[in-house]
Image (cartoon, rainbow, N blue to C red; front, side, top):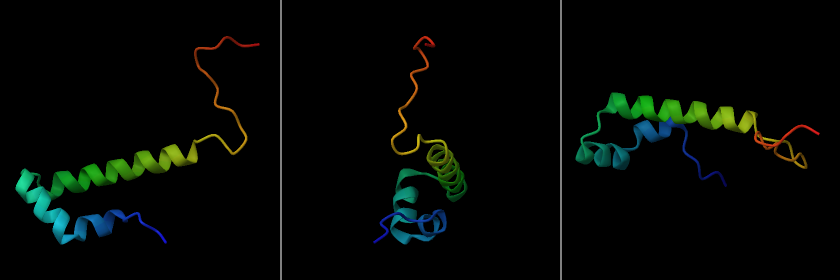
Length: 63
């Protein structure tokens, strides 16, 4: 069962729209935020270490 909303589902959700309105957030700025977050999330997922692969510490000195 997928619990994540797509960007389109979030932008079309009436409850989220009401919350944004109450918080003074415009539809356009919220859409930009969601699109940006989706890009960051997909970038992170495509650049995550593979299973069993250790993360490299950038501060560590080379062997």
